[in-house]
Image 1 (cartoon, rainbow, N blue to C red):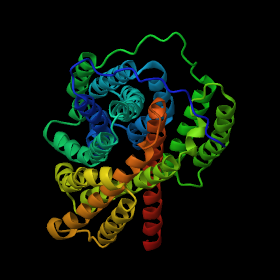
Image 2 (cartoon, rainbow, N blue to C red; image 1 turned 30 degrees about the vertical axis):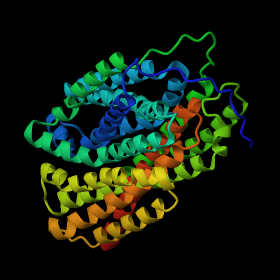
Image 3 (cartoon, one colour; image 1 turned 45 degrees about the horizontal axis):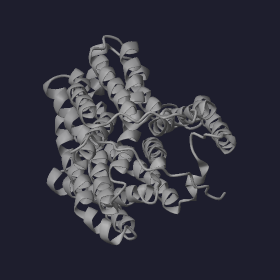
Image 4 (spheres, rainbow, N blue to C red; image 1 turned 180 degrees about the vertical axis):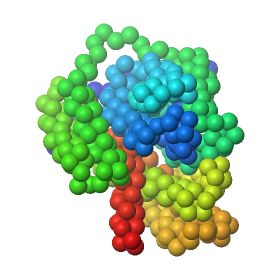
Length: 439
């Protein structure tokens, strides 16, 4: 399929006069860090939530899955909404949804209340994930070096947020209770809402706006939900379960249907010609693999420390802190090199370093000593994956026209989200097989 270039008009200004571009980058990075952190911050609080609300095991699983399903299902729709209706109103709507849902989740007195709040949190998180990346791209479109630096910061804080979520979740759960795992988002969300209102310009009025591709939006959302649901439920029910197989078959039918709808739509949700960009294809493949590796690594180390070594939630979180620091530091330290020389070798170097760390983790005993058996491998995994994610983020954003910033962001975030679900599911399946063989 040949790429059909869209007419390009000068971009409308984003910032109010006399405000620096780094203000947009700071707000976007903070929003991204907050929603990625929320994906992991709840994990260490699950036992406390189970005791307080007397949740069944199935309901407890849905505290995580309700968020993941809404997040994965709404990603492409949220990305397109930002392109159509403007960065400021869509970002404000996402912040409002996420902040209010976090407050509601912290006040939850029953399982249905908590699960509904978590689902709304996921919708808000989908908007923030796509809007924050697109906002960084739009703010730095005029300068390739500035975009590389800004995207490296966004990627660093974005990925580090997952590891830092374990730290913050453990500390808050031990010191203040699980409800503060939810409440911690409220002041940050309110501050960001005020910052967006004060610094970003509203979108200019448009005489004609392309219509939202409602059939494509519906089918892509159902396909994403079916795929994420099938993957996440496989850890509990097994891959041969009729529920899991039914969800995966539905996804396998719906995704080709979505492609057919987009190929015929006058205003598609996903313009298929964007895949003619080779960097975008490679970058999204890396994002898928990285989502799987990073999420599975954090899950594995956290489980080994809590269930194997008997560490508390707080101690487990603190033990994961060096990995989060390494993730962020690798991006920041190599951002200048990326801007000057490109990213051709970064994926190879990063993959080798991360593979060495994972091999080291494979030999970690149940009663691990932190300084000699945990710190070293987690630093290697964090630093190595930091380099690869830096290169992947550069790949999915370089050469993308400004009018497709939201679309590129939605595709990258969807790939990372699906990769994370696949990584945890594959790890759980492998662990179950090993345990069954040992038994």
